[in-house]
View 1 (cartoon, helix red, strand yellow):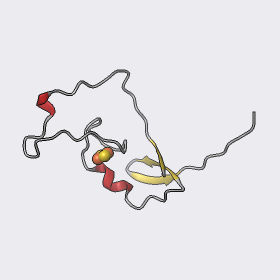
View 2: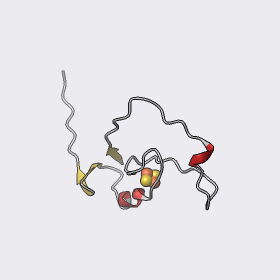
View 3: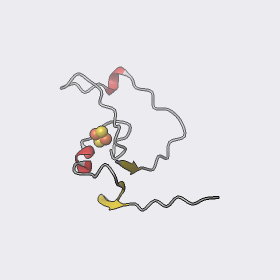
View 4: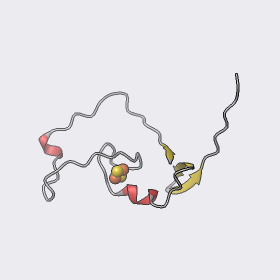
Length: 74
Ligand code: FES
């Protein structure tokens, strides 16, 4: 599966000890690209459950949309 995400940051996020979740004792970094608290996981990855591995998706206003990809010869 593939998922299109938009990143607007132009630099890194430095993770410090203050970013550690006091209850869990860890830092969860989002790898799905859907978090509203990026770069940290906020549980939004649950929306990606059920994605077809052969499809490409983009999430618009919280809704899953399939993206058509067309490759053209140049
Ligand atoms: S991995 Fe992206 S929100 Fe959890």
